[in-house]
Length: 505
Image (cartoon, rainbow, N blue to C red):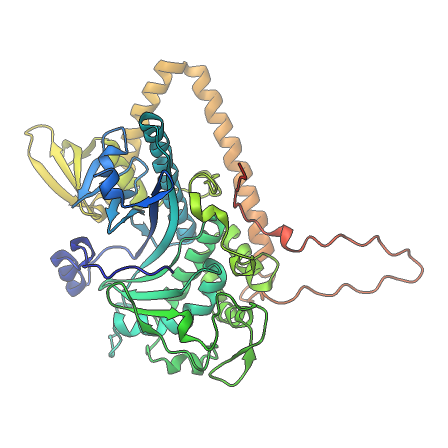
């Protein structure tokens, strides 16, 4: 994680009075996640602050933008874009925590990134200049809440952040870091926990990282104590000499390279050079793999098939970690062109979350009928509230995303009905039916592929936990009477479902 100057907490990051009232009353929003990514801007080969070059995101995006709060704006994809202390930052909407939420968050982030890159391409053509987005950092935000039936018993978000700094260091390094990384951070943010790492120029690895983080954070949240000694009691390996340092950006903790006896980002990930608090000698991959096994039931319940297979492959060494490359990939230096989004998680396979659908309808300006009157969304108030204009009298009303969940199905139907009317008028009924048939066939195909992937990961016996990180079984020797089959060429790391796209010209 690259170093940054200290910066003042934004108003939107502070706990709102509404949030405190909800927490006190036991109501509150659905547990959710959100991803953010920061990019440095290089203009004509020279690093420059986006504020100095563009002034505002409105000068990049050609179409109308929905104002969110402060200097941030919602993109048509549902994400938000803003300039933040010398970088361009993209943030996803809230996505409720459920199976596949890590993949949904990654998809949302990369869709917004692809949209921003296309707008920058148009800006380049109009102004005769070149703009490169250089990957800087990624932030994984997870709601912090305790089960309603449990008392806090001294557990706080600050204690959780300190505990997670010890626990997440090794596995997040292996999944998300590169050889120029400097640390993995954890920051308490009132009603959420934020894990900070380097931006990962590979959507599959980012989805795997998000899945791992969300599952582990939500599981640790249920522990009866957030004391660091819980790691020893649960046999989770931590380097003996490791002591985190305060986060350089706001409050929190960082597992910096200088906190270890040697730099873990440049050391051999398979070298058993680290002495754990339990007295064992282990490699970075070994520590990350054991941690993954301890949390695998939670990870499996939270993950999509692709992310589960990639987590297991990286921990076993069948898919490469970026730490195993000679240097940081060149894709970091031109994000959106040297690494691109290729729709790893199509909506037919992984539908949008409910929060995404609410926000998508609001940003698109789709009308919704509430209380016997039509309301048209005219703006946003922060991340969590939509501003409506009631059409019969022109009055304005503010509703939270959670309030709008009860109207979501009707909202979707009215939006689809209007879209269907436009399609029929433009293409004719026969063309519409043909497209519907194609979509139905695609859904059947994607569901079948999902069942096949689940079958590979789920145990044959109910309740059994599959050790996906164990070495593959050794085949029985061939019968002396039957000829030995020809050796199968080792695919090794060629089996990794990585999608880094590079170009040399």
